Length: 286
Image (tube, rainbow, N blue to C red; front, side):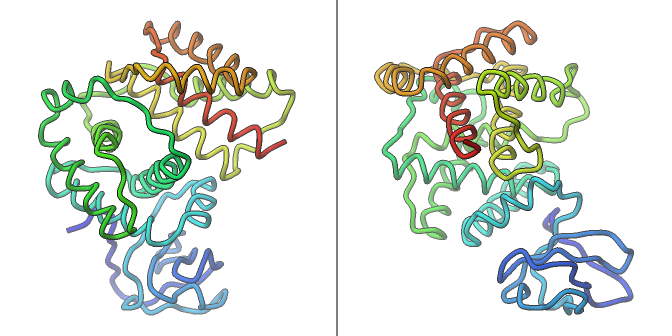
């Protein structure tokens, strides 16, 4: 059974708070809990109207405010693809993910598609090592690329299997791997560096910030688990460094800070990703 699916006893409807798009609505369930629900056409129900449960295909609880921007701005077919993949991974690996995992994966897929459209391809020289360390996860990641192609029509490069694999292993809820560092504080410190360097204020509830902080969270987790991927794509790194010097300087500062806090040396590929995310974040704010 999908971990994201909910079943309700008694009342067989959900009351609408607001519509997010044609197929997604923000509701209250029979116990008074807020929930985001998916279903074909349910976005046409008006506020305070009841949606029959048989119209609802999926429910998400404990959604952060910043996640609403992700859901609203990412095409429904990509969200549905992410949901399908997370369901498959959960069943195949017998792991439990937070309910928002599908949303973060949808955001990752959207960004991967954007990179492909812009012909930005990042080398992953440790890809073969990941096959040795995580053979089952990598096999599922390869299957996921085929699912993405079938459900969205977009054929991502095979190397994206590595980044998908990192998603699958990064957020597994394993009590034996509790974090010994404060990810939220590290992220906030990095955000303040960006605000200082660019003399801007960043809305912590915005969609763009949610994308940035999601990437930063995965970076911190990869560093802590020694799953960093190095890159030999020096031409792209040098090109972005020259094109966005201010974003690069800020990314280098953040990399230095995180490296010191986590006692890790951050490789150029990770800094390259930071440059892309920082530039996108500040350019949309400016």
